Image (cartoon, rainbow, N blue to C red; front, side, top):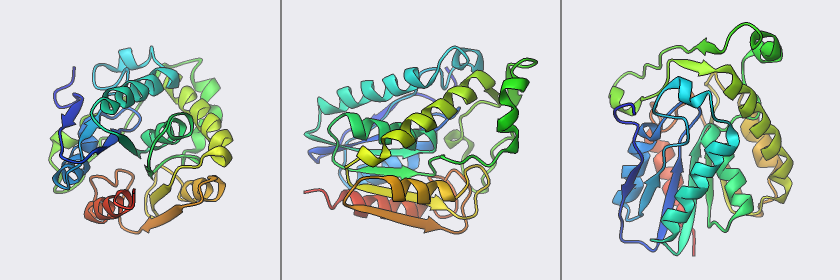
Length: 245
């Protein structure tokens, strides 16, 4: 287990709880600050570690999106034992998993942060070819000025098998969006380079929710729970969750 990658639970006084879902090759650490913020507002918060994450990249290579989704469902079941209603807040791939869970199980509200539909990497079309010769691709080290490294626990390589599974997850979620009905908040930075911003517009346009909101950021990168506009993200998410009856 990587230090700092553990699942965390923060008990709260409210009857509605928040399930936080981290991103691809990341860990619950990237959800810690938003979790503490929501917990100070009274929400019980659970951030599960997804299968294959926070341990070794070789272990992740033995998993796919169904394993990651099962981790989210497990977290939902645990939090349901403490709370009458469940809200979902997912970052990046975690946003996709939150959308899928919000379609398949009863949830109150879903906040989808930096979720990918269109990924800004021209190499993806050559993925089947790359997988013939290599199993992993190096990742650039994430550095966010002023952010403690303990909130950036992640892998320095990406299993290409898992990239292919992520693309399968994207296809699955985009098919279910028209039938998605939970209140939805979509937050996306115009300035990031991992996910194309039109991903957020697509999710917003295609979601069947009667209540939905699209919030644009301008200065942040992909990890909007940690970057320079994180307080804006925290505030918008909290305002959105508080609308729950």
